[in-house]
Length: 253
Figure 1 (spheres, helix red, strand yellow):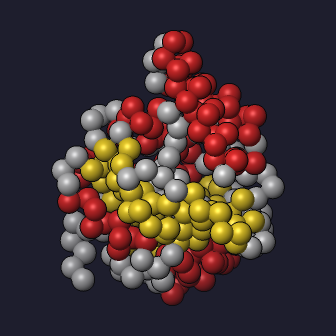
Figure 2: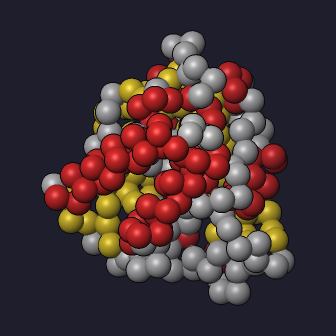
């Protein structure tokens, strides 16, 4: 495969993920799409995470390790360090406890042919901290625009990938819900996000994960509307109600 202009940079922040990171790395190595680099940014881990990554750095020249010797505290900063070092046309994200299915990148890269498509994402499945799958599939719409995304984030960060050739290197804001703010900032420019309509990843729900902190997420959502997107209190209330209703529906199904 000729990789020129088709390289994918995979950004993986890690902090004390020794229990899970090897499976995450192997899921990238197992991709049927071979034009990738994996940039692991260690945020001051005190367990064996770094040692595990270093083993794979020695085995595969596409894997790189960057280190912060003191934890920076929020995932936005390590991700931004990775983005700034990335060489690929496409930038994708995988946390150090999640897993991709083998055809994830292959399916996604081919959907960027449409000139208005700046983001490609997919459906994903949830698993618990021990890796047990309960068949809980998180399905998203076929496409998402800026207006659609304001009603709630349908782009799972572990499935999202964006085109640097169209939007440049877009960095995360150092806030909660940083992935949501990133996708909004891209779509606000008039681009769309397209779904592969397949399940391409496993998301690990850990006891301290964001998805388990429901009340906190509600306040973060409001902050996005009012202080990041600055859409005013009336529109913020409208989109917030839509978001809350969608979240309740997801909980009930």
